Image 1: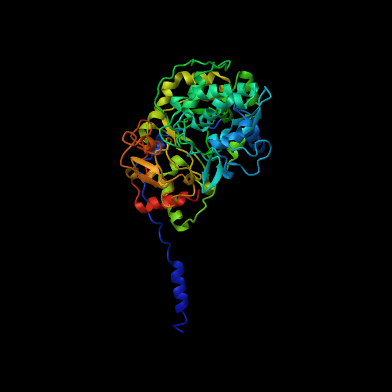
Image 2 (image 1 turned 135 degrees about the horizontal axis):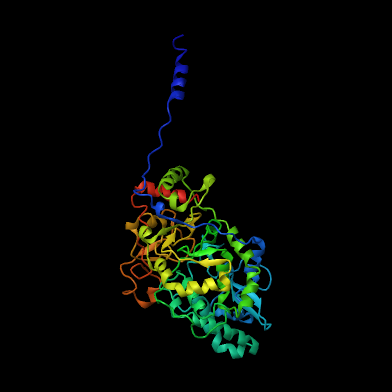
Amino acid sequence: MKHAALPFLILFACQAAPPAPPEPVSQPPELWWGSGIHIEHAPQRPGDPDLGWELMMNEGYVGCGLPASAFPLLKYVTPVTPDEVLPGRTGPAAEFPFKWNYHVAESGVPLAVPNCLLCHAGRFNGEIVVGLGDAETDFTADFAIISKAVDFLEPLKHELFSAEENAELDKFVARVRKLGDITKMRTIGTNPANEIGVLLFSHRDPVTLEWSEEPLIELPYRERLPVDTPPWWRMAKKSTQFYNGMGRGDHRQTMMTASSLCVDDVSDAEEIDTYFHHVAAFVASVKPPKYPFVIDRERAAFGERVFEANCAGCHGHYGEDDSYPNLVIPLDVIRTDPVYAEAGPFLTEFVEWYNTSIYGTDAWLEPIVGYIAPPLDAVWATAPFFHNGSVPSIEDVLNSKARPRYWKRIDYDSRNFDEEKLGWPYETMTYGHNEAPAEERKYIYDTTQPGHWNTGHPFGDHLTDRERRAVLEYLKTL
């Protein structure tokens, strides 16, 4: 009988054993998010996302461009490969590259005009991802994606086009030519959006939007401000636009400034404003992609605990407790490259221009000397990192001491992805732009150049290697 009680005692002992305490994780040496400046959400004009997609891909909100009849000829300078045509697109633009729309000008001339996907569609794992920032376009020449086509067509225009087509081409060329030296980036993939905006504002009267061939506002500086184009799927969470958080109010109006290359007067902008809330609604509806490779769930679970203790205060919580704090972190805390953050106070005239123009009716610019900590949904797909694209992988973001001073991508194949570091496979260089041969320079990211520093964000440095690996695994789940 005494042996009959043994199984019961063993079972009781197993049931009574307390659960093992969770493994401790590193804690931040200070609560960096405590210094953050919270930006409140502003009302957004409701719109129809499906209609917004149709308008984005078929409307002529950028109202000038190339004669549509020129597109068969452009295969000699920019071949249209099958992966540049969006599946399911219908109408006259069905065979256009996804960065162009078909639009009939008031003159009756059919045009190919740029659209939002010029910057806001990228490739990951061999597929076009609408809303992923483009990090492959070469802006190291004069607004290269367009000027290459213009350079090819201009000498032939009188042989190829009618007088009406040439008038439209001349208007487009004149505007594009204004986007000159200041829009030239040092490295392929970085975007000149800031310079383009400043230049276009400088050539327009803020009240009438009348175009002036000579700038009406003197540019306060000539240093380049490289930007890594952020993904659209962040917009549903963000209450402010731009890396320094200065875009406030209704997002549709700051997005509308993409049309300012070609509008002729306020009535043009007012017409675009009648439908651009639908485009903004589409942008806010874009969902982040799912990680397409294997995830170690056990390691990711540990990484979530590390993330919650060290990162969530700035970047938000995910899963059932999804929330995002919308914090601009002061420059003296984040300590990343200061040029963008410090540019706001020097752009007073341009801030005033925007805030007094039609684009500032329901929106406004309010610079802060700092950078917003972005939401991290599908952050693994968005290499390179930091506002200036100076860091090739998230592993390097989490370890400031490991960041390369000079680096270049191994290749531009979007299927070549580093699943361990979460980013681009890259080669560390021993020299930067000053020593590089001219033909190689644009492929090298040189973090010693002004505006291109990879300093700051030391917030992962105190983590152990194991914790850092676990956080990387967790980020794959977002």
